[in-house]
Length: 295
Image (cartoon, rainbow, N blue to C red; front, top):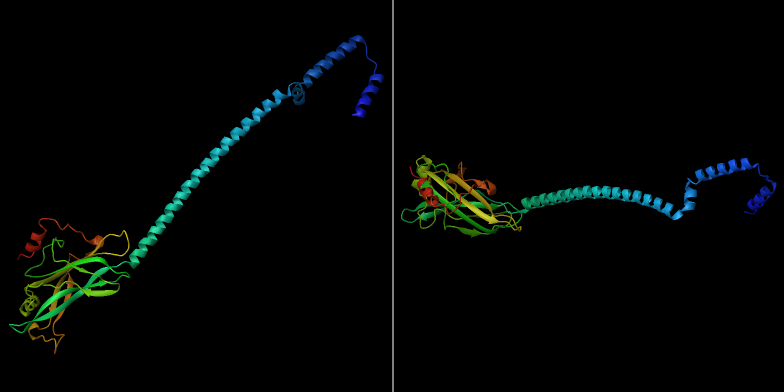
């Protein structure tokens, strides 16, 4: 600053002003130059710095506001997309968990089905002949026991085939209960039930000759041990076939002389959703169970 002040003083001493008209022209030029220079940033700031900087502050604030709104929109869209992705991820995880849960239940739950017929003889005292009754052989192939299992069996000797559409869900009070542990077999209810007569040697000969048909059917209803799962049902319906001479049967000397086997009827064999139940309270159900065997 000292050099500037000294230079200014020296310049004032050395400078000699021009003529009067030249001075007027010089002042006019200096006034024009000064006016032009006042259009610059620093000149305006010098005249009214508060107002000028306030204007610029307003401008920068507007730019900042627009940028903030833009950033908010981008963030909102990103959050919305992230929310959709998160929901999709949660839904996929839930589906995977449900599939794993269903697979675990399907692999571990009780599954009951009839594997074959169990034949039991009894001696008819008046004749000394061997008469027969039957049980279904129920098996639980699952890894857990059954829960609240009920079952029903029926056996009828008829002269003709069961009519198509026979209602196997007729109402009955002949219902037994059972508990089947995992990987276990057990016999169901015995038929024909007492005091009904058992199947005689004469009946067996008629079956072998095709004069009569011996039908054997039943069902098992049960729950598995997993909470929230529906009741299960398995049905079977067989025609029983017999080989051997029933009049010469002797369980002590020739226990294999008479053999029973089964073939599936074209209806009445199903499990769970395959079973098309008609409802046990239909008024015609019991009547159909009787007239279905009319010759």
